[in-house]
Amino acid sequence: MRIVFLGAAKTVTGSMFLLETDSGNILIDCGFFQGRRQKSKEMNRDLPSKVFDADAMVLTHAHIDHSGSTPTLVKRGYDGPIFTTPATADLCQHMFRDSARIQQHDAEYLNKKHADDPEWEKIEPLYTEKDAIAALKRMVTYHYWRPFEPFPGVRVVLHDAGHVLGSASVLIEAEGQRVLFSGDIGRRNMPILRDPEVPANADYLVMESTYGDREHGAIESTRDELARVINETAQRGGKVIIPSFALERTQEVVMGLNQLRQDGKIEDIPIYVDSPLATSLTHVFKSHPECYDEGALSFLAEHGDPFGFDTLTYTQSVQDSIALNDAAGPMVIISASGMCEAGRIVHHLRNNIENPANTIVIVGFQAQHTLGRRLVEGREQVKIFGVPRDLRARVEVLNGFSAHAGRTELIEYAKLAGPNTKKVFLVHGEEKAQESLAEALSARNMKVEIPDRCEIATL
Image (cartoon, rainbow, N blue to C red):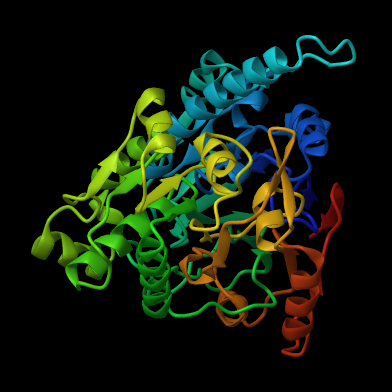
Protein backbone atom coordinates (compact mmCIF):
# COMPACT_ATOMS: atom_id res chain seq x y z
CA MET A 1 0.00 0.00 0.00
CA ARG A 2 1.29 3.47 -0.93
CA ILE A 3 0.31 7.12 -0.46
CA VAL A 4 1.07 9.55 -3.28
CA PHE A 5 1.07 13.17 -2.08
CA LEU A 6 -0.26 14.99 -5.15
CA GLY A 7 -1.16 18.28 -3.46
CA ALA A 8 -1.15 20.29 -0.21
CA ALA A 9 2.46 19.18 0.31
CA LYS A 10 4.54 21.91 2.00
CA THR A 11 1.71 24.29 1.17
CA VAL A 12 -1.79 24.82 2.54
CA THR A 13 -4.03 24.51 -0.50
CA GLY A 14 -4.60 22.02 -3.33
CA SER A 15 -5.57 18.96 -1.28
CA MET A 16 -5.02 15.78 -3.30
CA PHE A 17 -3.79 12.37 -2.10
CA LEU A 18 -3.88 8.95 -3.74
CA LEU A 19 -3.96 5.78 -1.63
CA GLU A 20 -2.91 2.80 -3.74
CA THR A 21 -4.04 -0.63 -2.53
CA ASP A 22 -4.06 -4.11 -4.06
CA SER A 23 -7.85 -3.84 -4.41
CA GLY A 24 -7.99 -0.40 -6.01
CA ASN A 25 -6.86 3.20 -5.72
CA ILE A 26 -8.67 5.88 -3.70
CA LEU A 27 -8.25 9.61 -4.32
CA ILE A 28 -8.79 11.70 -1.20
CA ASP A 29 -9.86 15.22 -2.25
CA CYS A 30 -9.20 17.07 -5.50
CA GLY A 31 -8.86 20.73 -4.58
CA PHE A 32 -7.79 24.04 -6.08
CA PHE A 33 -4.29 25.33 -5.48
CA GLN A 34 -4.41 28.99 -4.41
CA GLY A 35 -1.45 31.36 -4.62
CA ARG A 36 0.26 33.38 -7.34
CA ARG A 37 -2.17 33.83 -10.20
CA GLN A 38 -0.04 32.28 -12.94
CA LYS A 39 1.14 29.35 -10.84
CA SER A 40 -2.41 28.69 -9.61
CA LYS A 41 -3.69 28.77 -13.17
CA GLU A 42 -1.08 26.25 -14.29
CA MET A 43 -1.46 23.85 -11.36
CA ASN A 44 -5.25 23.84 -11.49
CA ARG A 45 -5.20 23.33 -15.24
CA ASP A 46 -2.53 20.62 -15.31
CA LEU A 47 -3.66 18.02 -12.79
CA PRO A 48 -1.05 15.38 -11.89
CA SER A 49 -1.46 12.37 -14.17
CA LYS A 50 -1.65 10.04 -11.15
CA VAL A 51 -5.10 11.38 -10.21
CA PHE A 52 -6.50 9.46 -13.16
CA ASP A 53 -5.31 6.19 -11.60
CA ALA A 54 -8.12 6.56 -9.06
CA ASP A 55 -10.88 3.96 -9.00
CA ALA A 56 -12.85 5.81 -6.31
CA MET A 57 -12.71 9.21 -4.64
CA VAL A 58 -13.52 10.41 -1.13
CA LEU A 59 -14.18 14.13 -0.57
CA THR A 60 -13.46 15.33 2.98
CA HIS A 61 -15.41 18.59 2.70
CA ALA A 62 -16.66 21.29 0.36
CA HIS A 63 -14.02 24.01 0.76
CA ILE A 64 -12.72 24.88 -2.70
CA ASP A 65 -9.08 24.01 -1.86
CA HIS A 66 -10.29 20.46 -1.19
CA SER A 67 -13.04 20.13 -3.78
CA GLY A 68 -12.51 22.72 -6.51
CA SER A 69 -10.74 20.56 -9.11
CA THR A 70 -13.28 17.73 -8.89
CA PRO A 71 -15.25 18.98 -11.94
CA THR A 72 -11.96 19.16 -13.87
CA LEU A 73 -11.23 15.56 -12.89
CA VAL A 74 -14.62 14.37 -14.14
CA LYS A 75 -14.42 16.54 -17.26
CA ARG A 76 -11.16 14.81 -18.18
CA GLY A 77 -12.46 11.28 -17.84
CA TYR A 78 -12.84 10.17 -14.22
CA ASP A 79 -16.05 8.13 -14.07
CA GLY A 80 -15.90 6.52 -10.63
CA PRO A 81 -17.93 7.31 -7.51
CA ILE A 82 -17.26 10.33 -5.28
CA PHE A 83 -18.04 9.37 -1.69
CA THR A 84 -18.85 12.09 0.84
CA THR A 85 -21.34 13.12 3.53
CA PRO A 86 -24.87 14.33 2.70
CA ALA A 87 -24.14 17.88 3.92
CA THR A 88 -20.98 18.10 1.80
CA ALA A 89 -22.86 16.91 -1.27
CA ASP A 90 -25.53 19.56 -0.70
CA LEU A 91 -22.90 22.27 -0.27
CA CYS A 92 -21.10 21.19 -3.44
CA GLN A 93 -24.33 21.64 -5.39
CA HIS A 94 -23.64 25.36 -4.94
CA MET A 95 -19.83 25.43 -4.62
CA PHE A 96 -19.10 23.71 -7.95
CA ARG A 97 -21.57 25.72 -9.98
CA ASP A 98 -20.51 28.99 -8.37
CA SER A 99 -16.86 28.19 -9.12
CA ALA A 100 -17.75 27.63 -12.77
CA ARG A 101 -19.67 30.93 -12.91
CA ILE A 102 -16.82 32.89 -11.30
CA GLN A 103 -14.31 31.43 -13.76
CA GLN A 104 -16.56 32.34 -16.68
CA HIS A 105 -17.18 35.87 -15.35
CA ASP A 106 -13.51 36.55 -14.59
CA ALA A 107 -12.45 35.23 -17.99
CA GLU A 108 -14.95 37.46 -19.77
CA TYR A 109 -13.97 40.51 -17.68
CA LEU A 110 -10.22 40.11 -18.15
CA ASN A 111 -10.44 39.17 -21.84
CA LYS A 112 -12.54 42.28 -22.48
CA LYS A 113 -10.21 44.46 -20.38
CA HIS A 114 -7.15 43.29 -22.34
CA ALA A 115 -8.85 42.97 -25.73
CA ASP A 116 -6.51 45.54 -27.30
CA ASP A 117 -3.34 43.94 -25.92
CA PRO A 118 -1.76 41.85 -28.72
CA GLU A 119 0.29 39.88 -26.17
CA TRP A 120 -2.71 38.96 -24.01
CA GLU A 121 -3.31 35.20 -23.84
CA LYS A 122 -7.06 34.64 -23.83
CA ILE A 123 -8.32 33.00 -20.63
CA GLU A 124 -10.64 29.99 -20.75
CA PRO A 125 -12.53 28.64 -17.71
CA LEU A 126 -11.25 25.33 -16.36
CA TYR A 127 -14.78 23.99 -16.44
CA THR A 128 -18.37 25.04 -17.07
CA GLU A 129 -21.59 24.60 -15.10
CA LYS A 130 -22.29 21.56 -17.25
CA ASP A 131 -19.03 19.99 -16.07
CA ALA A 132 -19.87 20.90 -12.47
CA ILE A 133 -23.23 19.14 -12.73
CA ALA A 134 -21.54 16.07 -14.23
CA ALA A 135 -19.29 15.88 -11.14
CA LEU A 136 -22.28 16.24 -8.81
CA LYS A 137 -23.95 13.26 -10.47
CA ARG A 138 -21.05 11.05 -9.39
CA MET A 139 -21.56 11.72 -5.66
CA VAL A 140 -22.57 8.91 -3.31
CA THR A 141 -23.35 9.92 0.28
CA TYR A 142 -22.78 8.21 3.61
CA HIS A 143 -23.51 9.56 7.07
CA TYR A 144 -20.81 9.67 9.74
CA TRP A 145 -19.86 6.34 11.32
CA ARG A 146 -21.50 4.20 8.59
CA PRO A 147 -18.82 1.96 7.02
CA PHE A 148 -18.77 1.27 3.30
CA GLU A 149 -16.55 -0.60 0.84
CA PRO A 150 -15.55 1.27 -2.34
CA PHE A 151 -14.29 -2.11 -3.52
CA PRO A 152 -13.87 -5.51 -1.81
CA GLY A 153 -11.22 -5.62 0.88
CA VAL A 154 -11.20 -1.86 1.55
CA ARG A 155 -13.35 -0.39 4.35
CA VAL A 156 -13.97 3.35 4.76
CA VAL A 157 -15.58 5.23 7.66
CA LEU A 158 -16.21 8.98 7.72
CA HIS A 159 -15.82 10.70 11.11
CA ASP A 160 -16.94 14.21 12.09
CA ALA A 161 -13.95 16.57 11.62
CA GLY A 162 -15.77 19.55 13.16
CA HIS A 163 -14.27 21.94 10.60
CA VAL A 164 -17.17 22.96 8.36
CA LEU A 165 -20.67 21.60 7.83
CA GLY A 166 -20.35 17.96 6.73
CA SER A 167 -16.54 17.86 7.04
CA ALA A 168 -15.02 14.44 7.59
CA SER A 169 -11.85 12.68 8.58
CA VAL A 170 -11.43 9.53 6.51
CA LEU A 171 -10.39 6.23 8.11
CA ILE A 172 -9.43 3.59 5.56
CA GLU A 173 -8.74 -0.03 6.48
CA ALA A 174 -6.93 -2.13 3.87
CA GLU A 175 -4.30 -4.86 3.83
CA GLY A 176 -4.33 -5.05 7.62
CA GLN A 177 -3.49 -1.33 8.03
CA ARG A 178 -5.57 1.60 9.33
CA VAL A 179 -4.78 4.86 7.50
CA LEU A 180 -6.36 8.07 8.76
CA PHE A 181 -6.63 11.18 6.58
CA SER A 182 -7.56 13.96 8.98
CA GLY A 183 -8.90 16.39 6.38
CA ASP A 184 -9.06 19.85 7.90
CA ILE A 185 -9.45 19.53 11.67
CA GLY A 186 -11.85 21.84 13.43
CA ARG A 187 -11.48 23.58 16.77
CA ARG A 188 -13.14 22.67 20.02
CA ASN A 189 -15.82 24.85 21.62
CA MET A 190 -16.63 26.73 18.43
CA PRO A 191 -20.15 27.87 17.51
CA ILE A 192 -22.51 25.87 15.27
CA LEU A 193 -20.69 22.54 14.85
CA ARG A 194 -19.81 19.66 17.14
CA ASP A 195 -16.22 19.26 18.31
CA PRO A 196 -13.96 17.16 16.06
CA GLU A 197 -13.73 13.49 16.89
CA VAL A 198 -10.53 11.47 16.58
CA PRO A 199 -10.63 7.87 15.35
CA ALA A 200 -8.23 5.83 17.45
CA ASN A 201 -5.60 3.21 16.66
CA ALA A 202 -4.44 4.57 13.30
CA ASP A 203 -1.31 2.91 11.92
CA TYR A 204 -0.59 5.93 9.71
CA LEU A 205 -1.87 9.49 10.03
CA VAL A 206 -1.97 12.08 7.25
CA MET A 207 -2.67 15.26 9.20
CA GLU A 208 -3.19 18.91 8.38
CA SER A 209 -0.79 21.44 9.95
CA THR A 210 -2.08 24.88 8.91
CA TYR A 211 -1.65 26.37 12.37
CA GLY A 212 1.12 24.05 13.53
CA ASP A 213 3.09 26.95 14.98
CA ARG A 214 0.26 29.09 16.34
CA GLU A 215 -2.60 29.14 18.81
CA HIS A 216 -5.95 30.87 18.48
CA GLY A 217 -7.62 33.27 20.86
CA ALA A 218 -10.91 32.27 22.45
CA ILE A 219 -13.93 32.88 20.24
CA GLU A 220 -15.53 35.04 22.95
CA SER A 221 -12.61 37.49 23.04
CA THR A 222 -12.50 37.51 19.23
CA ARG A 223 -16.15 38.52 19.12
CA ASP A 224 -15.39 41.36 21.54
CA GLU A 225 -12.56 42.49 19.27
CA LEU A 226 -14.94 42.44 16.30
CA ALA A 227 -17.40 44.56 18.29
CA ARG A 228 -14.63 47.07 19.05
CA VAL A 229 -13.66 47.30 15.36
CA ILE A 230 -17.27 47.75 14.23
CA ASN A 231 -18.02 50.44 16.81
CA GLU A 232 -14.79 52.37 16.14
CA THR A 233 -15.36 52.27 12.37
CA ALA A 234 -19.00 53.29 12.78
CA GLN A 235 -17.91 56.33 14.79
CA ARG A 236 -15.68 57.34 11.84
CA GLY A 237 -18.64 56.87 9.50
CA GLY A 238 -16.75 54.13 7.66
CA LYS A 239 -17.47 50.69 6.29
CA VAL A 240 -16.25 47.41 7.77
CA ILE A 241 -15.27 45.11 4.90
CA ILE A 242 -14.94 41.42 5.86
CA PRO A 243 -13.51 39.06 3.23
CA SER A 244 -14.95 35.73 4.27
CA PHE A 245 -15.15 32.20 2.97
CA ALA A 246 -18.73 31.67 1.86
CA LEU A 247 -18.73 28.28 3.57
CA GLU A 248 -18.67 28.19 7.40
CA ARG A 249 -16.77 31.42 8.10
CA THR A 250 -19.61 33.61 6.87
CA GLN A 251 -22.14 31.67 8.91
CA GLU A 252 -19.91 31.87 12.02
CA VAL A 253 -19.43 35.62 11.62
CA VAL A 254 -23.15 36.19 11.04
CA MET A 255 -24.08 34.15 14.10
CA GLY A 256 -21.43 36.05 16.09
CA LEU A 257 -22.88 39.39 14.97
CA ASN A 258 -26.33 38.15 15.93
CA GLN A 259 -25.03 37.30 19.40
CA LEU A 260 -23.33 40.70 19.73
CA ARG A 261 -26.61 42.39 18.85
CA GLN A 262 -28.48 40.26 21.36
CA ASP A 263 -25.95 41.35 24.01
CA GLY A 264 -26.09 45.02 22.98
CA LYS A 265 -22.35 45.14 22.18
CA ILE A 266 -22.48 46.64 18.67
CA GLU A 267 -24.21 49.65 17.22
CA ASP A 268 -27.41 49.05 15.29
CA ILE A 269 -26.00 49.51 11.77
CA PRO A 270 -26.83 47.73 8.48
CA ILE A 271 -25.05 44.43 7.86
CA TYR A 272 -24.86 42.96 4.37
CA VAL A 273 -23.85 39.50 3.23
CA ASP A 274 -22.92 40.28 -0.36
CA SER A 275 -22.36 36.81 -1.74
CA PRO A 276 -25.01 34.79 -3.57
CA LEU A 277 -22.99 31.68 -2.76
CA ALA A 278 -22.90 32.44 0.97
CA THR A 279 -26.66 33.04 0.85
CA SER A 280 -27.25 29.67 -0.81
CA LEU A 281 -24.90 27.89 1.58
CA THR A 282 -26.66 29.45 4.56
CA HIS A 283 -29.87 27.79 3.37
CA VAL A 284 -27.97 24.48 3.35
CA PHE A 285 -26.88 25.14 6.94
CA LYS A 286 -30.49 25.63 7.92
CA SER A 287 -31.39 22.24 6.43
CA HIS A 288 -28.72 20.29 8.36
CA PRO A 289 -29.32 20.88 12.09
CA GLU A 290 -28.15 17.29 12.68
CA CYS A 291 -24.61 18.73 12.37
CA TYR A 292 -25.17 21.43 15.03
CA ASP A 293 -23.71 21.36 18.51
CA GLU A 294 -25.80 21.89 21.64
CA GLY A 295 -25.01 25.62 21.74
CA ALA A 296 -26.37 26.23 18.24
CA LEU A 297 -29.46 24.14 18.93
CA SER A 298 -30.09 26.11 22.14
CA PHE A 299 -29.66 29.45 20.32
CA LEU A 300 -32.09 28.23 17.65
CA ALA A 301 -34.66 27.28 20.30
CA GLU A 302 -34.28 30.53 22.25
CA HIS A 303 -33.75 33.17 19.57
CA GLY A 304 -34.87 31.55 16.33
CA ASP A 305 -32.82 31.62 13.12
CA PRO A 306 -29.17 32.25 14.08
CA PHE A 307 -28.44 33.37 10.51
CA GLY A 308 -31.15 36.02 10.19
CA PHE A 309 -32.04 39.24 12.03
CA ASP A 310 -33.67 42.58 11.27
CA THR A 311 -30.52 44.58 10.38
CA LEU A 312 -29.08 41.81 8.19
CA THR A 313 -29.59 41.76 4.42
CA TYR A 314 -28.49 39.04 2.00
CA THR A 315 -27.89 40.71 -1.37
CA GLN A 316 -28.44 38.77 -4.55
CA SER A 317 -28.27 40.87 -7.71
CA VAL A 318 -25.21 42.54 -9.14
CA GLN A 319 -27.12 45.83 -9.01
CA ASP A 320 -27.64 45.46 -5.24
CA SER A 321 -23.94 44.75 -4.82
CA ILE A 322 -22.91 47.78 -6.88
CA ALA A 323 -25.31 49.96 -4.90
CA LEU A 324 -23.26 49.29 -1.75
CA ASN A 325 -20.36 51.19 -3.33
CA ASP A 326 -22.35 54.44 -3.32
CA ALA A 327 -24.13 53.86 -0.01
CA ALA A 328 -22.77 55.94 2.85
CA GLY A 329 -21.43 54.24 5.96
CA PRO A 330 -21.45 53.08 8.59
CA MET A 331 -22.18 49.50 7.58
CA VAL A 332 -20.69 46.02 7.58
CA ILE A 333 -20.14 44.16 4.30
CA ILE A 334 -19.28 40.45 4.40
CA SER A 335 -18.30 39.10 1.00
CA ALA A 336 -16.44 36.23 -0.67
CA SER A 337 -13.87 34.99 -1.50
CA GLY A 338 -12.03 34.55 1.78
CA MET A 339 -8.54 35.09 0.34
CA CYS A 340 -9.66 38.07 -1.78
CA GLU A 341 -8.75 36.36 -5.03
CA ALA A 342 -12.13 36.36 -6.78
CA GLY A 343 -15.78 37.30 -6.44
CA ARG A 344 -17.49 40.44 -5.20
CA ILE A 345 -15.04 41.10 -2.35
CA VAL A 346 -12.40 42.19 -4.87
CA HIS A 347 -14.73 44.92 -6.13
CA HIS A 348 -15.50 46.06 -2.56
CA LEU A 349 -11.79 46.24 -1.77
CA ARG A 350 -11.11 48.22 -4.93
CA ASN A 351 -13.78 50.76 -3.97
CA ASN A 352 -12.97 51.03 -0.25
CA ILE A 353 -9.27 50.32 0.29
CA GLU A 354 -8.12 53.93 -0.14
CA ASN A 355 -10.52 55.44 2.42
CA PRO A 356 -8.92 55.71 5.90
CA ALA A 357 -12.38 55.74 7.55
CA ASN A 358 -12.88 52.11 6.48
CA THR A 359 -11.61 48.91 8.09
CA ILE A 360 -10.78 45.60 6.42
CA VAL A 361 -11.20 42.71 8.85
CA ILE A 362 -9.35 39.48 8.03
CA VAL A 363 -11.06 36.50 9.70
CA GLY A 364 -9.30 33.53 8.09
CA PHE A 365 -6.02 32.07 6.87
CA GLN A 366 -4.49 33.86 3.88
CA ALA A 367 -2.28 31.73 1.63
CA GLN A 368 1.02 33.05 0.33
CA HIS A 369 0.91 35.34 -2.72
CA THR A 370 -2.83 36.08 -2.38
CA LEU A 371 -4.28 39.57 -2.12
CA GLY A 372 -5.47 38.68 1.37
CA ARG A 373 -1.92 37.85 2.48
CA ARG A 374 -0.66 41.17 1.09
CA LEU A 375 -3.28 42.99 3.16
CA VAL A 376 -2.24 41.08 6.28
CA GLU A 377 1.40 41.99 5.58
CA GLY A 378 0.42 45.66 5.53
CA ARG A 379 1.72 46.44 2.06
CA GLU A 380 1.51 50.16 1.35
CA GLN A 381 0.18 49.41 -2.10
CA VAL A 382 -1.54 46.36 -3.61
CA LYS A 383 -2.72 45.51 -7.09
CA ILE A 384 -6.44 44.95 -7.61
CA PHE A 385 -7.51 43.94 -11.11
CA GLY A 386 -3.96 44.82 -12.16
CA VAL A 387 -4.21 48.42 -10.95
CA PRO A 388 -2.06 49.62 -7.97
CA ARG A 389 -4.16 50.83 -5.03
CA ASP A 390 -2.90 52.60 -1.90
CA LEU A 391 -3.78 50.76 1.30
CA ARG A 392 -5.22 53.56 3.45
CA ALA A 393 -8.01 51.62 5.14
CA ARG A 394 -7.17 50.02 8.48
CA VAL A 395 -6.53 46.27 8.50
CA GLU A 396 -7.46 44.15 11.53
CA VAL A 397 -6.65 40.43 11.75
CA LEU A 398 -8.95 38.32 13.94
CA ASN A 399 -7.64 34.75 13.82
CA GLY A 400 -10.01 33.63 16.56
CA PHE A 401 -12.67 32.90 13.95
CA SER A 402 -10.44 30.30 12.31
CA ALA A 403 -12.10 26.92 11.79
CA HIS A 404 -8.70 25.16 11.89
CA ALA A 405 -7.29 23.50 14.98
CA GLY A 406 -4.43 25.39 16.61
CA ARG A 407 -1.05 23.94 17.56
CA THR A 408 -2.10 22.39 20.90
CA GLU A 409 -5.23 20.86 19.36
CA LEU A 410 -3.19 19.37 16.50
CA ILE A 411 -0.76 17.78 18.96
CA GLU A 412 -3.70 16.36 20.92
CA TYR A 413 -5.28 15.01 17.72
CA ALA A 414 -2.08 13.16 16.80
CA LYS A 415 -1.80 11.71 20.31
CA LEU A 416 -5.41 10.52 20.34
CA ALA A 417 -5.19 9.00 16.85
CA GLY A 418 -3.19 6.17 18.32
CA PRO A 419 -0.36 5.53 20.73
CA ASN A 420 1.21 3.10 18.27
CA THR A 421 1.00 5.16 15.09
CA LYS A 422 3.92 4.18 12.89
CA LYS A 423 4.25 7.55 11.15
CA VAL A 424 2.58 10.95 10.95
CA PHE A 425 2.68 12.72 7.57
CA LEU A 426 2.17 16.47 7.87
CA VAL A 427 0.32 18.17 5.00
CA HIS A 428 -1.73 21.34 4.50
CA GLY A 429 0.77 23.73 5.97
CA GLU A 430 3.52 26.15 5.12
CA GLU A 431 6.95 24.78 5.92
CA LYS A 432 7.56 26.95 8.98
CA ALA A 433 4.35 25.72 10.62
CA GLN A 434 5.06 22.12 9.62
CA GLU A 435 8.61 22.12 10.96
CA SER A 436 7.46 23.57 14.28
CA LEU A 437 4.72 20.97 14.65
CA ALA A 438 7.04 18.15 13.54
CA GLU A 439 9.49 19.13 16.26
CA ALA A 440 6.73 19.07 18.88
CA LEU A 441 5.47 15.66 17.76
CA SER A 442 8.99 14.20 17.55
CA ALA A 443 9.57 15.32 21.15
CA ARG A 444 6.62 13.07 22.01
CA ASN A 445 8.32 10.07 20.35
CA MET A 446 6.27 10.20 17.16
CA LYS A 447 7.85 9.52 13.79
CA VAL A 448 7.07 12.46 11.52
CA GLU A 449 7.58 13.12 7.83
CA ILE A 450 6.89 16.25 5.78
CA PRO A 451 6.40 14.98 2.21
CA ASP A 452 7.11 16.89 -0.97
CA ARG A 453 4.61 17.16 -3.79
CA CYS A 454 4.37 13.91 -5.78
CA GLU A 455 6.43 12.06 -3.15
CA ILE A 456 5.40 8.43 -2.62
CA ALA A 457 5.34 6.76 0.81
CA THR A 458 5.21 2.96 1.04
CA LEU A 459 3.27 1.78 4.11
